[in-house]
Image 1 (cartoon, one colour):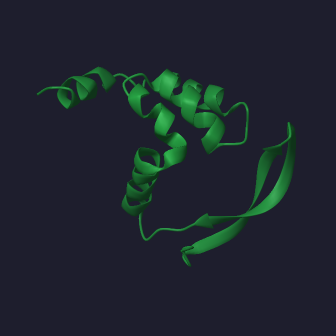
Image 2 (image 1 turned 45 degrees about the vertical axis):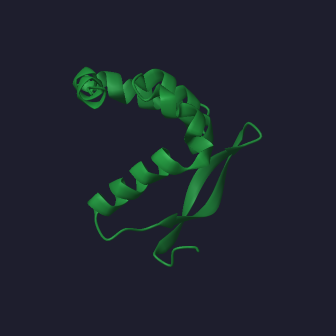
Image 3 (image 1 turned 90 degrees about the vertical axis):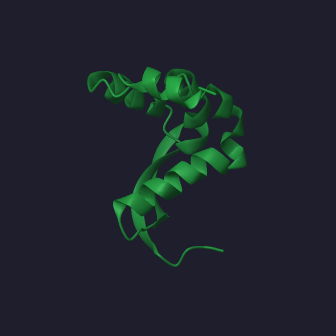
Length: 103
């Protein structure tokens, strides 16, 4: 069922190519660890993101598949990519892929 741990906030969503402000419900968490765990579980198990699962080793391809489902802003993939590049958040990705794919 729906979580009772939530807050309703104003957000800007793109609907039919037009940005508009609307009120949406957002889940709240006891701490950031619980938030990250839920986010990870969502991306790993939600059927909406299934097509991206086999692209996990390439963040750009993964983002291109996940972004249109995850966010309504058509600029979202570009915004996320600029953050990853600016702070070099992908600099250790190759190590994670190497360790994860070892027998």
